[in-house]
Amino acid sequence: MLELVELVSGEAFAVCALRRSGHEASFVLKHLAAMREQDRDQWAKLVQRVQSLADRGPLVANEQKSRCLRGTDLFELKEGTTRIIWFYDRTQRRRIVLTHGSRSAGRRRRLRR
Image 1 (tube, rainbow, N blue to C red):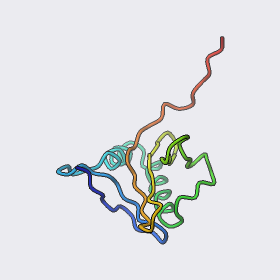
Image 2 (image 1 turned 180 degrees about the vertical axis):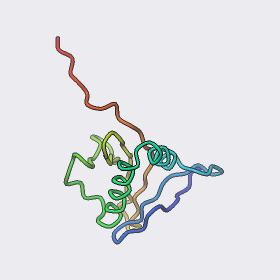
Image 3 (image 1 turned 90 degrees about the horizontal axis):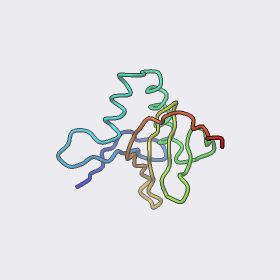
Image 4 (image 1 turned 30 degrees about the horizontal axis):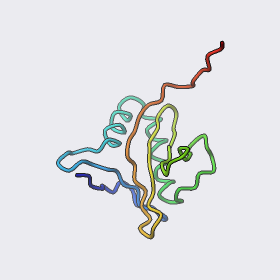
């Protein structure tokens, strides 16, 4: 079973993480903890971006930092090589849910034929 853990409460939204019942940390919290140990500067920027998301809501004006994943109701929050997948409750609950974190491999190169 999954449960929500509130991470940040902002002016517009509460940002939460999914956690499996009986586990201490969620998928995204484990990723953020590892990121904090490996790259504190990038971690600080991402925490600031999450706080901004809580204060302003899911405005996706800069696709370099956040974008909607094509064909879904999921979004991607980007900072450096880190990607956080999230969605939000469009009803009156005003809740953003972070689901997973990962590192991207970097820029993709097209193969020439």
